[in-house]
Length: 343
Image (cartoon, rainbow, N blue to C red; front, side, top):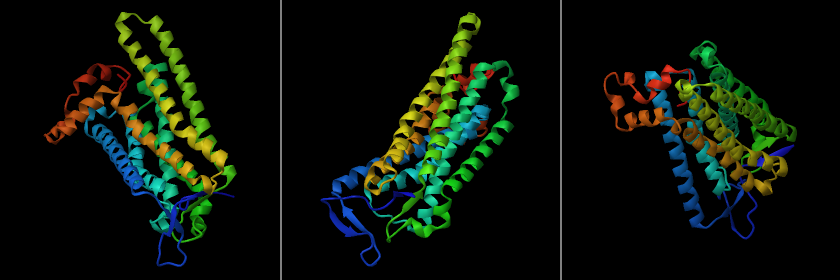
C-alpha cells in the first residue's frame, strides 16, 4: 500500500522542532527561513483570493442576468462553483502544505479534506468534458442544437457529474475515510493512503479518458469548422468565425488541462507517493489547483459577455431595479444564433 505524506517532509540541514511541543506524541518539524514563509503565504493568499474573485464574477454574472441563462452558461456556472470551492478551501490548504510540515487542522479534517479535493477536481474535469460535448453539438449540428440541448438536460448532466464525482472519490478514499487512525503515525501528521492500483485507475479516469474525449471532440470541431467555412457564403461568414473560435477556445482548454494535470500524475506514478518526495507531490497538487484559476480566463474572460456583465457588477449597476433584465448589447447577435455564448 502506498501513501502520500501530508505532514513531515525530508528536511536535512534544517532546525528540527515539534509540531506540538506539549504533546509527547507530536511529530517533529523543520524550521524554514522567515522569508520563505512570507513569500509563500503572500503568493498563496493572492492566488486564492484572485481565484475566488474571478469565479464569483462568473457565478454572479450567469445567475443574475436572464440573457445568460443558456445551457452552455449553466455548465460554465457548475464549473465556476467547483473552482470557487477550490479557491476557498483547496488552494489555501494546499498552499500551506508547501511550507508547513505539520498538519494543524485535526484528525477529522485530515480525513475529509482529501475527499473534498477529489470531489471538486473530478467534478471540475467532468464539467470540462460536458462543455466540450456541448460545443461539439453546437458546431456539428447547429440547427438541431436547441432540440438536443436544453437547460433541463444540462442540469441533469450536472447532477450526475457531481454524484459520480462523490461516489468515485469515496470509492478511492474508502479505507482512509473508514480507518482515520491510519492517517497519522504521530500528532501533527496527515497521511493519505492510496493503493498503487487506485493511482493507476485515477490516472485513467481523470487524465487519459478525459483527454481522449476532449481531444477527439476538438479534432472533429476543427474538421467541421474548416469544412463549413469553405461551404458558407459571406452572409454566414460570421457564424463560421464563431465556429473557429469555438475550436480555438477548446484547444486552449486542452492545453491548460494537460499542463496542470500531467505533471501531477507523472509524479505520483513515478514516485509512488514516497514521503521523501512529499514536497514534489505537494507542488504538483498545487499546480492542479491552479487550473481553477485558469478556467475563469478561458471560459469567461475570452467571452465579451463576461466583460460587459463584470462591468455591471463592479459598478454596482446590478443593484438597480430589474437589472437582471438589462440588455447585454454585445450578446444580441450571438443570442440570435445557435452559438449562444461563444462570440
